[in-house]
Figure 1: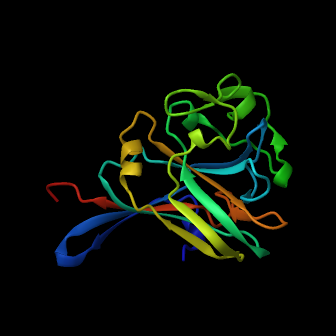
Figure 2 (figure 1 turned 45 degrees about the vertical axis):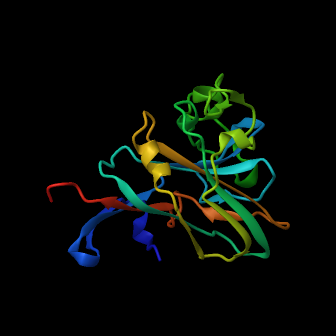
Length: 230
């Protein structure tokens, strides 16, 4: 289990694998996170300790990791996040990478911390309405404008579809990234930031996970190919 002191820390560790071959293990913590409303771009939440998953059909939690500091090939990856509360009904949840374009990766989190309603962004703040997304919509991989975070053309193939997941506070969810080329392609792109979208369907209640502003920040655990010559 990830410890409290993980927050804000990216740890690099050398570990020995079978046959005396070495690989680098890297833990990246989220560089930004928020939850957004597809039809209310000026409402976002960037200062809360929790992010909502199943509040409404078009609400998406967004969690991004900056891959620009990684120089070696990514061979294995696991995305981890912590459930923030306990609710009785089980949930069906999807985790999918956002289509990586220069416009899509420029989303920002605001200073709102008013729970599910969110808070209007402030003038000059690097988030949807007043700065980066005043006139720029979400877009598909071909550059087609999209009006909604719920548009399927904004998301690539899900890395996980969790059905019947019990929702218990302090429980960590671990999502293996079975195809590391997803991360490799983004790492080598002009916009090396991967954004995961998380959304779900459940019973009544506000299902939430812990944000990077909590003691339990989401993390991306990576194994990297050892550099040649070591």
